[in-house]
Image: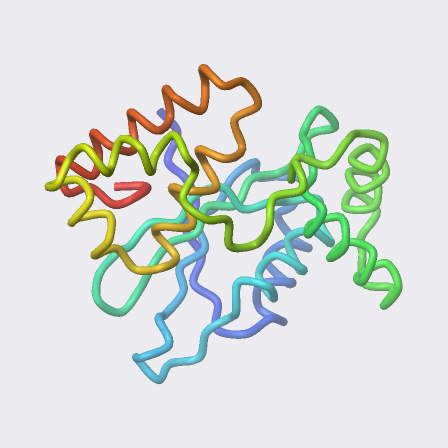
Amino acid sequence: MDEIPTVIVETRADWRAWLRKHHRKESKVQLISYKRHTGRLFLTHRAQMEEAICFGWIDTTLKRIDEEKYARTFVRRTEKGSWSKNTLRYAEEMIAQNKIAKYGLEMYTAGKKKKPIDHDLPKNPGIPPELKKLLSRNKKARIFYESLAPSYKRMYNRWVHRAKLRETKEKRAKLVLERCKEGKKPMN
Protein backbone atom coordinates (compact mmCIF):
# COMPACT_ATOMS: atom_id res chain seq x y z
CA MET A 1 0.00 0.00 0.00
CA ASP A 2 1.27 3.48 -0.87
CA GLU A 3 2.32 5.67 2.01
CA ILE A 4 0.22 8.79 2.50
CA PRO A 5 2.27 12.01 2.29
CA THR A 6 2.33 14.00 5.52
CA VAL A 7 2.61 17.75 5.78
CA ILE A 8 2.88 20.02 8.81
CA VAL A 9 1.80 23.59 8.20
CA GLU A 10 1.40 26.38 10.70
CA THR A 11 -0.06 29.04 8.45
CA ARG A 12 -2.78 29.26 5.87
CA ALA A 13 -0.21 30.45 3.33
CA ASP A 14 1.87 27.29 3.89
CA TRP A 15 -1.17 25.03 3.37
CA ARG A 16 -2.17 26.95 0.25
CA ALA A 17 1.39 26.71 -1.12
CA TRP A 18 1.43 22.92 -0.57
CA LEU A 19 -1.95 22.55 -2.29
CA ARG A 20 -0.91 24.78 -5.21
CA LYS A 21 2.16 22.63 -5.80
CA HIS A 22 0.65 19.17 -5.15
CA HIS A 23 -3.11 19.31 -5.78
CA ARG A 24 -2.82 17.50 -9.13
CA LYS A 25 0.20 15.30 -8.28
CA GLU A 26 -1.08 13.74 -5.07
CA SER A 27 -4.47 12.20 -4.35
CA LYS A 28 -4.27 12.17 -0.56
CA VAL A 29 -2.38 13.88 2.26
CA GLN A 30 -2.35 13.90 6.03
CA LEU A 31 -2.29 17.45 7.36
CA ILE A 32 -0.69 17.48 10.80
CA SER A 33 -1.94 20.24 13.09
CA TYR A 34 -1.22 21.27 16.64
CA LYS A 35 -4.02 21.38 19.19
CA ARG A 36 -5.06 24.74 20.64
CA HIS A 37 -3.76 24.07 24.14
CA THR A 38 -0.16 23.74 22.89
CA GLY A 39 0.12 27.44 22.13
CA ARG A 40 1.64 26.59 18.74
CA LEU A 41 0.37 28.08 15.52
CA PHE A 42 -2.44 26.06 13.98
CA LEU A 43 -5.07 26.37 11.28
CA THR A 44 -8.73 26.22 12.12
CA HIS A 45 -10.76 23.49 10.46
CA ARG A 46 -12.55 26.13 8.42
CA ALA A 47 -9.28 27.61 7.12
CA GLN A 48 -8.05 24.12 6.23
CA MET A 49 -11.32 23.42 4.40
CA GLU A 50 -11.46 26.72 2.53
CA GLU A 51 -7.97 26.29 1.13
CA ALA A 52 -8.57 22.63 0.29
CA ILE A 53 -11.80 23.48 -1.54
CA CYS A 54 -9.94 26.12 -3.56
CA PHE A 55 -7.85 23.32 -5.05
CA GLY A 56 -10.57 20.68 -5.35
CA TRP A 57 -9.78 18.76 -2.18
CA ILE A 58 -11.94 17.68 0.79
CA ASP A 59 -11.29 16.34 4.29
CA THR A 60 -12.16 12.77 5.20
CA THR A 61 -10.92 11.54 8.57
CA LEU A 62 -9.47 12.98 11.73
CA LYS A 63 -7.04 11.03 13.88
CA ARG A 64 -5.36 11.85 17.17
CA ILE A 65 -1.57 11.51 17.03
CA ASP A 66 -0.68 12.42 20.60
CA GLU A 67 -1.51 15.01 23.28
CA GLU A 68 -0.26 17.84 21.07
CA LYS A 69 -1.11 16.89 17.48
CA TYR A 70 -3.74 15.36 15.24
CA ALA A 71 -3.88 14.40 11.57
CA ARG A 72 -6.70 15.32 9.23
CA THR A 73 -6.71 13.40 5.96
CA PHE A 74 -7.55 15.33 2.81
CA VAL A 75 -8.24 13.78 -0.59
CA ARG A 76 -8.52 15.15 -4.09
CA ARG A 77 -12.15 15.33 -5.18
CA THR A 78 -13.53 13.60 -8.22
CA GLU A 79 -16.51 14.67 -10.30
CA LYS A 80 -18.49 11.79 -8.78
CA GLY A 81 -18.16 13.15 -5.24
CA SER A 82 -21.02 14.79 -3.37
CA TRP A 83 -20.86 18.15 -1.67
CA SER A 84 -22.45 19.31 1.56
CA LYS A 85 -24.22 22.64 1.84
CA ASN A 86 -21.31 23.92 3.94
CA THR A 87 -18.65 23.01 1.39
CA LEU A 88 -20.71 24.56 -1.40
CA ARG A 89 -21.02 27.74 0.68
CA TYR A 90 -17.27 27.78 1.42
CA ALA A 91 -16.54 27.39 -2.29
CA GLU A 92 -18.88 30.28 -3.13
CA GLU A 93 -17.05 32.47 -0.60
CA MET A 94 -13.68 31.53 -2.12
CA ILE A 95 -15.01 32.27 -5.63
CA ALA A 96 -16.26 35.68 -4.45
CA GLN A 97 -12.78 36.39 -3.05
CA ASN A 98 -11.20 35.22 -6.32
CA LYS A 99 -9.15 32.59 -4.46
CA ILE A 100 -10.41 29.40 -6.11
CA ALA A 101 -8.06 27.59 -8.51
CA LYS A 102 -9.11 26.08 -11.84
CA TYR A 103 -9.43 22.49 -10.56
CA GLY A 104 -11.34 23.68 -7.49
CA LEU A 105 -13.78 25.56 -9.72
CA GLU A 106 -14.22 22.47 -11.93
CA MET A 107 -15.05 20.32 -8.90
CA TYR A 108 -17.40 23.00 -7.52
CA THR A 109 -19.22 23.20 -10.87
CA ALA A 110 -19.63 19.40 -10.92
CA GLY A 111 -20.78 19.41 -7.28
CA LYS A 112 -23.42 22.09 -7.91
CA LYS A 113 -25.16 19.74 -10.33
CA LYS A 114 -25.93 17.26 -7.55
CA LYS A 115 -28.16 17.38 -4.50
CA PRO A 116 -26.17 18.32 -1.36
CA ILE A 117 -25.64 15.44 1.08
CA ASP A 118 -26.79 17.24 4.25
CA HIS A 119 -30.35 15.90 4.20
CA ASP A 120 -31.24 19.15 5.99
CA LEU A 121 -29.89 17.92 9.31
CA PRO A 122 -29.56 20.52 12.03
CA LYS A 123 -26.01 21.28 13.15
CA ASN A 124 -26.64 19.65 16.53
CA PRO A 125 -29.24 16.93 16.02
CA GLY A 126 -30.61 15.27 19.12
CA ILE A 127 -30.25 11.58 19.86
CA PRO A 128 -31.98 9.62 17.10
CA PRO A 129 -35.00 7.69 18.45
CA GLU A 130 -33.45 4.41 17.26
CA LEU A 131 -30.32 5.05 19.33
CA LYS A 132 -32.18 6.50 22.31
CA LYS A 133 -34.28 3.33 22.57
CA LEU A 134 -31.22 1.06 22.51
CA LEU A 135 -29.27 3.17 25.02
CA SER A 136 -32.22 3.16 27.43
CA ARG A 137 -31.93 -0.64 27.57
CA ASN A 138 -28.17 -0.83 28.14
CA LYS A 139 -26.78 0.96 31.20
CA LYS A 140 -23.09 0.43 30.35
CA ALA A 141 -23.48 1.83 26.83
CA ARG A 142 -25.68 4.71 28.05
CA ILE A 143 -23.16 5.75 30.72
CA PHE A 144 -20.34 5.72 28.17
CA TYR A 145 -22.40 7.65 25.60
CA GLU A 146 -23.34 10.27 28.21
CA SER A 147 -19.66 10.66 29.18
CA LEU A 148 -18.66 11.51 25.60
CA ALA A 149 -17.70 15.04 24.64
CA PRO A 150 -20.53 16.84 22.79
CA SER A 151 -18.60 16.65 19.51
CA TYR A 152 -18.39 12.84 19.73
CA LYS A 153 -22.10 12.57 20.53
CA ARG A 154 -22.85 14.74 17.48
CA MET A 155 -20.74 12.46 15.27
CA TYR A 156 -22.65 9.40 16.39
CA ASN A 157 -26.03 11.18 16.20
CA ARG A 158 -25.44 12.61 12.74
CA TRP A 159 -24.21 9.26 11.41
CA VAL A 160 -27.44 7.57 12.49
CA HIS A 161 -29.62 10.52 11.36
CA ARG A 162 -28.00 10.59 7.89
CA ALA A 163 -29.21 7.12 6.98
CA LYS A 164 -32.09 7.34 4.53
CA LEU A 165 -33.74 3.98 5.20
CA ARG A 166 -35.26 2.99 8.56
CA GLU A 167 -33.39 -0.33 8.41
CA THR A 168 -30.09 1.49 7.93
CA LYS A 169 -30.83 3.82 10.85
CA GLU A 170 -31.53 0.81 13.07
CA LYS A 171 -28.38 -0.97 11.90
CA ARG A 172 -26.25 2.11 12.57
CA ALA A 173 -27.86 2.63 15.99
CA LYS A 174 -26.94 -0.97 16.86
CA LEU A 175 -23.34 -0.37 15.74
CA VAL A 176 -23.14 2.77 17.89
CA LEU A 177 -24.56 0.81 20.84
CA GLU A 178 -21.91 -1.89 20.39
CA ARG A 179 -19.14 0.69 20.19
CA CYS A 180 -20.43 2.39 23.34
CA LYS A 181 -20.56 -0.96 25.15
CA GLU A 182 -16.90 -1.41 24.19
CA GLY A 183 -16.02 2.14 25.28
CA LYS A 184 -15.12 3.27 21.76
CA LYS A 185 -15.37 6.84 20.53
CA PRO A 186 -16.20 7.61 16.89
CA MET A 187 -13.26 7.03 14.53
CA ASN A 188 -11.33 4.85 17.04
